[in-house]
Length: 136
Image 1: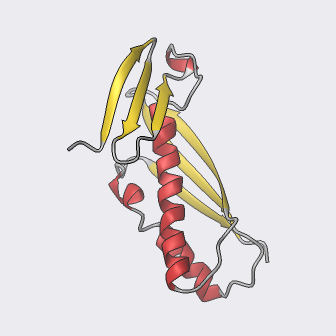
Image 2: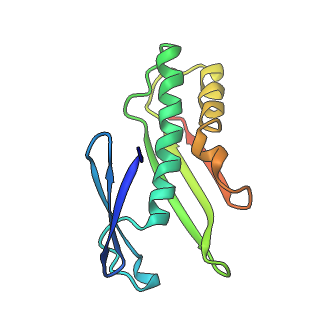
Image 3: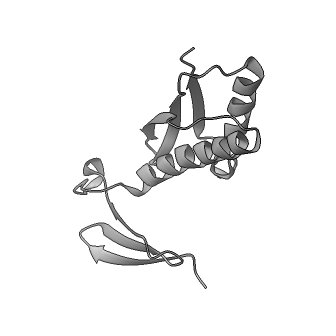
């Protein structure tokens, strides 16, 4: 059975369904590529997937080692390249909560982010930058 089912709805819009949960997602082409920009573009989803995957792996590390990362936030910047049109760079800034993390915990959390499956699956020509802001 497929993981996702999708239908082209016209006007550069695709409606996708996560088959297991029934969750729905709509994508639009971006305005700089003839779309309306009324929803995530497919490349926006790629950027979101990288951030969400890295944060999930951080969460798995945190649960296993009894470290609280609840409230961590991200800002993701996508930079497109031309010829061919593709994602040239993804920058993920992690704003970590103000907690007394040890230097070892910080290093382990940062290392964990770089092991996420999306990070490891993306083409090496696409620059991926992870920046961690520690408040303490």
